[in-house]
Amino acid sequence: MDALIAKLKTQIIEQLNLEGVAPDDIDADSPLFGEGLGLDSIDALELIVLLEKNYGLKIENPAEGKKIFSTIRSIAEYITANGKA
Amino acid sequence: MITIKSYCSVRNHQLKLNGTTLLAKEKELLFSDFIKSAYDLNGSTYLKFFKMDDLCKLAFIASEFLLKNRKLSEQYGAENVSLVFANTSSSLDTDLKYYQTVKDFPSPSLFVYTLPNIMLGEISIRQKFKGKNAFFVFEAFQAEFLCNYATRLLNDKKAKAVIIGWVELLKENYEAFLCLIEETESGTELTKENLEKLYTDR
Image 1: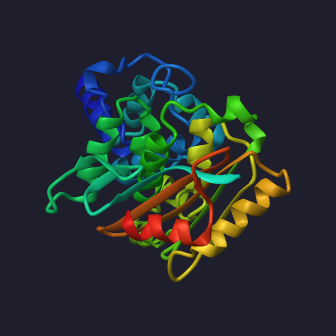
Image 2 (image 1 turned 180 degrees about the horizontal axis):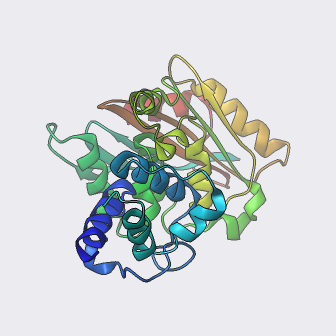
């Protein structure tokens, strides 16, 4: 799980152009939206693309997406639970 | 009198404010590195900059230097500051980049920049402007059109300050020329001839 979390941090920084943010700056349990990294709605769409492109996972239910993308750890758990880690 | 209060140009790896060179880099430098240098020179942190497409970055940087130390939305009221920009290539640079992603995974963050007037929105968000804005596509810089449009906005009391601009970018070819137009008692009068001269000498 820790290795997947570390990989996700790097992928998210690259995909979302988070200039000046290092992997160690991101707390795996902090909220990604609203506070924490302060991501916006376009970032949410980019995260959906990231999951599909890198892990072959499609999120089609918006309610499900809100829960999955709440933290880095929740994304990692979703990937692991769906056998794509 | 309606005057060109200040102007900023960005081209040929140089950034000038009112004719004074503030940044000059080597010609081999890519646009992405040059514009990052300009961002660093500006000295303020605005992380949204790094998510913008190249056209918006160019317009944003020019506006940052043009409006440094000015708080137009406070001085005139947010709804009294207008933006009137134009270029030749519209958002083609980002359109092409987005098209490349369509074949694989369409990029949401590129898609939102597939309109040239997004740069007006980015500047408005940054400067808290809520006035009228317009974007036009011309074959070349149209001093007369921009001059007439700004004059009309001010004379009709639709705005108290207008930023007019030419912001063109396609791959590594780029240029921005922004002017702040205000009513003042002295200064360079806004005329087609004066605007053309500043553009030519930029």
